[in-house]
Each structure stands twice: as C-alpha cells, then as structure tokens.
Image (cartoon, rainbow over all chains, first blue to last red; front, side, top):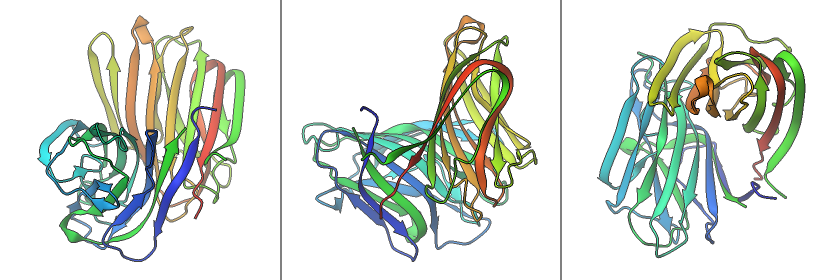
Length: 178
Length: 168
C-alpha cells in the first residue's frame, strides 16, 4: 500500500551531543525526516539560533558550499517574509531562527528526494515550526525547499545548531516512504 | 510493518463540528491527520481546537497561528494572529465543491511541551482553487488527547488519524 513509512534510523537525544547523524538512505525512494522537540544548551530567554541540516556521504557531512534554499517565513505576529540563500555550507532547517528559551523547540517534516542517486542533485522540502525569541514570542515557521547542487550519493543527514551549541533534546527519525 | 499507524477513523454527516477524541497518547509524539469532506456554507473556513485530557475543548486564548492562503486568481492572503482561542483556516472552501487538508501535530500528549501543528489544505471558494500552508501552536504545557474541527455545517467529513511510530 502506497504511503507507508518504514523507519530506517532514529535518535532520541537526552544528554548533550554536538550533532545528530542519521543514515540508512540506500535506495532511490523518497525519504522523510521527522523532528520534534529539538532544543539546545543555550537557555538565554531573549536570544535566538538556527537549526541546520547537512546531507551525509558515507556518514560524513558534506560541508561544501553547494547548498541553496528558499521559502516563505510564516509569522504569527508580523508580515510574512521571503527567505533565500545560495552558496551555503548548510541548510537552515526551518528557514528561520527559533528562540533559545523554554519551549522554544523545533519541529518539522522534511521530504528528501534523489538522495541516493549519484547522478542527481539531492532535494528536500521544508515544513518547520518553532517560536521566536521570548521578547516577541511569535510563532515562526518555514515552508520551502532546498537543494544540494552536487551529483553525489547521499546516505543520510546531520542535524546541528548554529554557534557550536550542543543538542540537548529531541527525537530525530528518518523514514523511507514506500 | 509501516511506522505510519492508523489510530482512528471518524466519519460524520450533517454535523456542525467533529470531535476526534482519545487519539493522542504516550505511544506517539507526531501525528498525521488527513481530512476530506464537504459542507453547506458559502466560502467558509474550517477552524480547529484541541481537546484536553479531561475531554474539554480548549478555548483559552493561548493559540497562535500563521497561514498563507494562495488562490488561483492570484490572491495571496497572510492570515495570522496571536493569543486567540482557536486555530484558524485548516482549509478554505465552498458548498458542494469538497475540501481536503492534512495536519502534522507535534507533542500534543506531552504535559511539558507546547502542541505544534503544521497544516496544508485545498478547496475552491468563489470557484477558485485555493490552497493554504500554515502553522499553529497551543502555548500550554498540558496534555491533549484530541482535536475538534468546526465553523461549518459539514455535509460529510472523514478524518483519519495516524501516529508516526518510532522504534528505538
């Protein structure tokens, strides 16, 4: 039956780690990454930070500047905006920052295409949601997409925070869509 | 076995709201809800509220939402607000032309996290194909077990609720 999800890798973080790497992409299927409650070691109530995603090759993050992303910023407290960047060495996971205070965590659903095909670019869609800094406390989210403009065989993803913060919580699961 | 587990299917006819109850639990952190149906109203939106573990519909002004509505007639609407008592615009449609929307809901059962929602829907108000992409949050650290869809007179509605199973 179409539309099923088969788990290929998962990690639940309960103590601080620099990043999370999920692997197991091993065919030309569409894959779906699901994230909930991603939080960091930064507890400044009035600051913010960016969650990032990179693709991995043989489990090693691709750090080249071949990433591009674009999308729409959804904001409960102000005008929506456009987000676009080229020549990046990672992808802003939600296309927008989230706050560093309590309950200002990241959740999202990301579909990944052509990853394992070494003759194609790797694409992903982005649907993420979080909350901005405590000074505004707006609901923030990103809807858009990204590409690794490199014909290479991708086998997974790496999730991390900006500014070398550690990941202190979150459940990260990679599914194959069949 | 699929990690997308069907928890509940709710169908109803000739009702003004639909409650999907006792579907969120400690078994899952993320839920996918797919909804199709029809209603009798002229150019109307469907809204939603969570139902808490006591079975009460949450009407406190703790919801924030932001939705981009995209109409084939080249009308783009930013629908946003804060500290509201509902989550707005799961979909926007019209009598007799049906609608469909999909939600992802995060952490509803957790009593230590907010409940977040991603939405995308499509309908045809004023004879124009219209889709929406949105986000919402209930800023309460309380356990939710269900969700209500309302604000229209449903002719028919079918709601399927799935859990995204994580096997450790």
